Length: 121
Image (cartoon, rainbow, N blue to C red; front, side, top):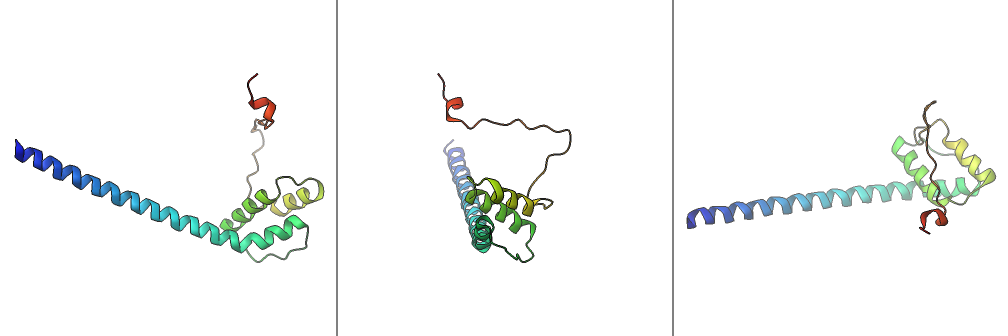
């Protein structure tokens, strides 16, 4: 009986070590991914600021991932833009793989982000 208990304890300790190693591996992978995203964002941030500001920008050839990061950075910078700046940014990204245009026939429901609509009365 004690022998079975000892084997069970060793098995559980072994499983704990395996789970701990899996968590460490996952955390290190997430940290590398976050570092890579930060590096990409630092690389495209000057272009995003220039596009939002309305400056004529000559962009180098960007990968799909870099374009997506540029779109994300511009999105954060330009949440309150209207008029010419908003149209200029939309024209820049039109036809690229950085944005997804809905297919014809598909519908999207618009959500109301009004504070009044999210409160219960």
